[in-house]
Image 1: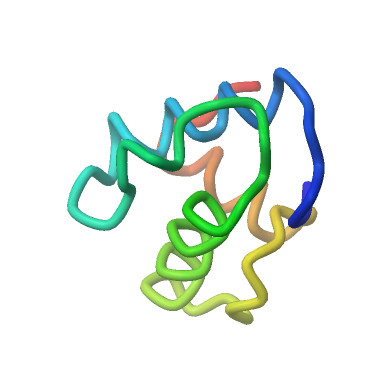
Image 2 (image 1 turned 45 degrees about the vertical axis):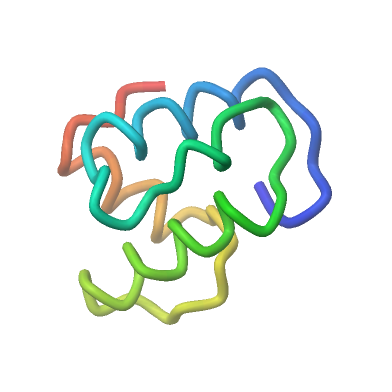
Amino acid sequence: WAFGDNDPRVGYLADFMRRTFPAYTSVKALGNYYGKYIKASITEFQKRTGLYPDGCTGPKTYAMLKKYGFDY
């Protein structure tokens, strides 16, 4: 998923990020739209886990999220 996507799966991702990483996931990230707040959260996650911080949830980011319990 990437900036501008509007999908229920984005909402699931946002909810996971808010519950798992509340220190850097704003409540404004919640919802089905992949906007600037969820992008910022994913970018910070990528930085903290050694991934390229592009803010997109591609295969490498998805695989790393699964290590933290994301199961969608």
